[in-house]
Image (cartoon, rainbow, N blue to C red; front, side, top):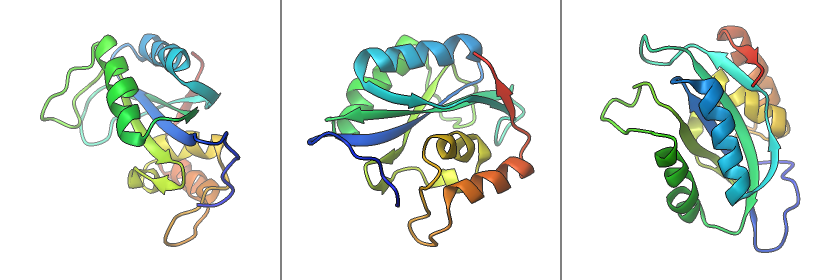
Length: 162
């Protein structure tokens, strides 16, 4: 990873992806507000609408939020993200492509890439590149900004105002 921003001692910079295809214009803002109530939110990307991956489900609306937190990735997931998903009516099923009210996932935690799907999908790469364009692939060194631009051309994403 390159060009990581400075954080306060004892905290980590974390990028969290948000996605919804059940009333997303309601659930994405609610998730952002819930994160602001529990975390030190540094930045919020633009929201983007794009096709569901792996199914004929309704389009998803996605964004990325940058937070600074003293929590470990496990604590962040268990104490913040999963409870917010539950509050917003997230129902987990065996179908990983099922429609959902909200999906919150850690993409980058400190210097660690948690979700390698960023390098494959525009709905993750584009909003993350907006917040941290100088990040680079941990193995190839390819810049996120370039990957996001390429993926955006391949996948139809539309900016959404929320």
